Image: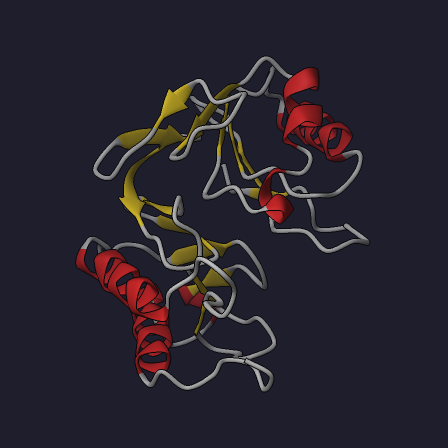
Amino acid sequence: MEPITVTADAEEFTCNAYLVPGEATTLVDAGTMPGVEDVIADALDEAGVEGLDRVVLTHQHYDHVEELDAVLDRFDATVYANAAHPRRDVAIVDGDEILVGDEPCEVVETPGHADDHVSLVGDERLYSGDVVVYNDGAFDDGSFGRTDMAGQSREVLIESLHAILDRLPDTVAAMYPGHGDVYRASDSHDTVREVVERATERAERREPKYPDE
């Protein structure tokens, strides 16, 4: 089944949280939207799926985990995360394979925006978190995560973008980022690889991403 953006109607700043029904029904990130657990429950009912099996965190910035407790209090789900968290059940590291819905995905450690950032690379989909997005207000056709705050690094993020490119199958046709729009290659002539390559080229210019950076 196609991922569902359960934070699509949020009125507050949040990441994109994706519900992926399937053999291992998965929530990728939890977001900050109050009541997201009710949206998840409704989406599960509509999809004819019983329960939420797991939550996978791309990283633990507040906009990705604020509603994690509410989700876990509602659903008996296993939490997968790279960094320690009071409610983490399984630690994931580079090279691990995890089932997201029906799709096996490789865990790729992608720091730079956050030390604990991971991306999930499948044969059809890339869950890129904040390391690479399609549009975010700075760029509209391939952008990279911000690196101007404490603990962030443009140089490390560039290495992470190359890590994604090195392990991205050509069959990947959709990118599900932490912010902005979902990108589907069928919507245009650009492949997901080309979008990530364009974001990488922009990051490598090492110019400020935002005017006040």
